[in-house]
View (tube, one colour):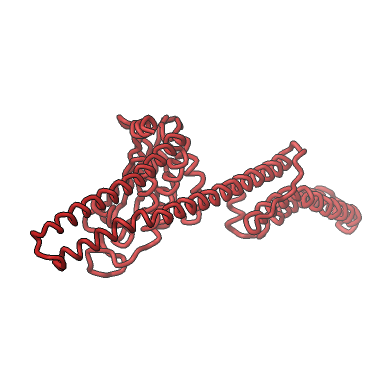
Amino acid sequence: MKIYETLARGNFPKTYTGKILLVSFIGVHVPMFGAVTYVLLADTKPFLEQLDVLGAMLLATLIGTGGTMFVMKELLAPVRAASEAADQYLRNRQIPRLPTKYTDSAGVLMASVQECVTRLDASLSSTEGRYQQLERDHSEQFKTLAGMKHDFRTPLTQILGFASLMKAEAIGPIGNTTYQSFVQKIGASGQQLLETLNSVIDLSDSQSLSQIAQDSENLDLVTVARDAVNIEHLHAEQRSVEVEVRAPSELELFTVKSVAKNLTEAMLHAAIAATPSQGTVSLAIESTDTGACVLVESCGGQLSLEDVPPRLATGIQGLKSGAGTLSATPESSTPTTLRLCLIDTLCRSVGAQIRLTQTDGVSFSMYVELDAAASEVLSLAA
């Protein structure tokens, strides 16, 4: 990679094909210049008498150079095709049709790009279908709740109406026996409303527990973390941020894989986004008595008052406003705020919590402890 990186930094030639052709041109002509120099110095014949030989060598070299460069350009066609296929999919989501029957390196490249794009498109289509299904399910749930308006409205109307009558003493003094009847009705209506609300809450909790039980599985958290680093590699490269990983060879955990994956990626993304150029982000995976912990630290990064949601700001003392205000509470939010809110939501979905700490002017860190025992309890409860 060093030779390629050197040529790429110099930006000459601009295209990859141009770089290959330049190297081919130099490789062909260096031997020719050496041969010509040797002939001129070693042969005692006058220079004019050697012109025919030199001319033939030059002509043969030019023909050979032209043929070599043409063939080299054609041999680079698979690389160009794979690059264009990936670019077209990213821009227009156009599925390529690359040849996959060749077994050399260029053939493997085209086959791999074809398979990657095909799998990615299938995954995106599946995800989109699942998202639409979730939207439909949520819509049905909202319709169900909307149909229960009457169940809520009737007891609430009685409560409000009776309360107004009692407040205005419209029937008589408080000691009137009629008020005692109203009090009984208010209690009955309140109890009816409470039972209805408890039924809805129990149904929601039951569905959540059932879903967690279905989704939880034994997984290697270290593999999940390294996959997250690979996914965030492009983001880190664009910001010139180095990502370091400290983890054992493997660490098995019983939890929801999609949550663990999204949580680790979100923590890395938030740390990289808040880290200045040439900074470092470290990801540590450690075992605990009840599960595992994920620690992401941004060396050089700092969180401002506007970055941290109020419910997460309790663990950080002396947060300074990035907007220059003197208020002790944030008056606005930033993209980091949304990222931290997402992390907090993912944590709470599996019974975990995020803890933020910050050393002024040095670094900040995010700590999440994933409790395998909690996931097992949820699974058994469901």
